[in-house]
Amino acid sequence: MTDWQVTAATIFCDAVADEVTVLVYRDFSVGCTGYQQYYEPDRETLKSLEKRGKKLKRPLKCQGLECYRVANYREKLRAEEAGENRKVD
Image 1 (cartoon, rainbow, N blue to C red):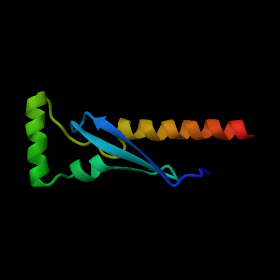
Image 2: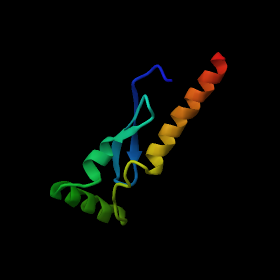
Image 3: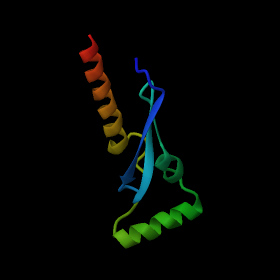
């Protein structure tokens, strides 16, 4: 088991064209500030997404907690953890 509680990384999420913080907890469950803000956006946030989407000429929408950005970060940490565990043995 890991000896950390939570780790986080701030990334640029191209799905919503904004920086988000991806969190991975000790049990490898995940969280994302972008998910909290953009998955079911309020009216104001939705307007902001539409405006940025028009500027970028593509629709913007949060892909949820199983998007590849979150999954890649979690898998990177799992691989690092597995590598450290092998070195200790």
